[in-house]
Length: 301
Image 1 (cartoon, one colour):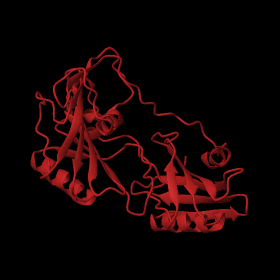
Image 2 (cartoon, one colour):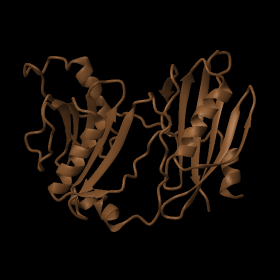
Image 3 (cartoon, helix red, strand yellow):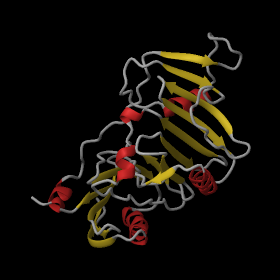
């Protein structure tokens, strides 16, 4: 069975939950009044928890630092003027996660870091991180950047995000562990091509609630979202279809009725790799003006 047939049958692939796991040993390094018993403000805690990732290094002590960078940060990380440091998490001796709010448009923040880090002899790498297809607003901006100093690291990764807020949220991850650095793969070049998921922005007056990114690998990606809209299935599908075409995808087939809209897609990327896709929009049973959107992209073999 070829990839296209698998794609058609694979309408509801297994969703890999990106669970947020709170480390078992967390020390509060600083609070507003340096009082270990004082609670961290809710908004700050929410941002810091978003930095938290599945803890592959169980048993490593993690320190939460509110409102500033770690004192022993081993490399200089540039910041635009008026940057607010929300806080950071230090994991052991080699891993640092940092949350920033920057009152500058996200596109300018991206340009700032690309220029500043390349000036400091960081080498920008191809982004291979998973990306969701369905944006939450017409103005949403999300970009992932990766930089390495050498094949031994360190590795510096940035997630730059702006939706309805007037500021840009930046999450930074720094890994200085030379024995476990992915820079040797990034700088050396990857032996495979990752799918470039298009950004699909919603029509006016449509609320988008992203689901967790499903299956993602070098050969496929799966994006899902709930939609709340007064538009019907055909209108929603046409809106997203036009953006797929603008992103370079060719529509191979489609079918639509009041119960569902499906379309099949094809793309040849810059590395001459062929990709196939399936987009579907279906109503949520028992709920008016609510839909489930799904975009699956898979490499053709």
